[in-house]
Length: 305
Image (cartoon, rainbow, N blue to C red; front, side, top):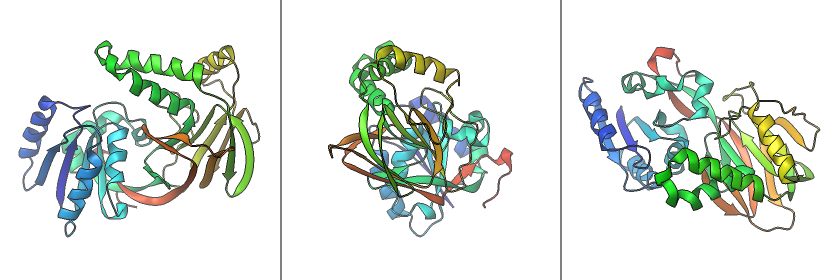
């Protein structure tokens, strides 16, 4: 097996890379390569190149960074079913909480010795996502974050708080045409979300029902008007006091395998795939059941399903 480590410079540094190489050098009979990408976003091109070079080998790719890095790696792979993906988080990756402590995934030796379990991933006509595809509130928050990133000297946490306030104030209640399991409907919403593990980037947990291998994802729709109503929603959501139902147009949640989303007027809408923003008119979304081999730390004792 060939072990390839891809480091995102936006979330790692030279010290991390040096410590990683030192750890890998101590593991006997390990064939490995360490790549530090030139800039955030280069993971896709690099992953594609790696897949071509090692197409005759069993390949395990380690994405060192956040959920964004892992998605960009997957986006560069032509046949996801043939590779094993390991995520070594250098910032919170809430998707991993479906398997236990995130800290365990940061143990390089345990990840190298780890087994794989088959999990679902989300496929769209504009790319793949490991955990989430969102429209509305969260996509506006990421757009705000990108616009404010010049202020990074103030710290990422403060920028993210400002970006969320920006989204709460400016996200419109669009009228969406949404097909849920091929059943068409019209919905006015501030936020439309599809989650594998229903934890937002701001650590809001919407459900304890986590299953990343059942071929289903959580579909959520939220509608709010006015700044006060949105602030109250954000406060209650952070304390898990929002009651979601399958038939409530203000707070809808249900399990789905396919969804189609578009603006009723046919204008492009911003979709957010694990933190990556894409502007498109039509969004076709489905779940690839057991489509990804995810590496689990050896201490967890998982074996391939």
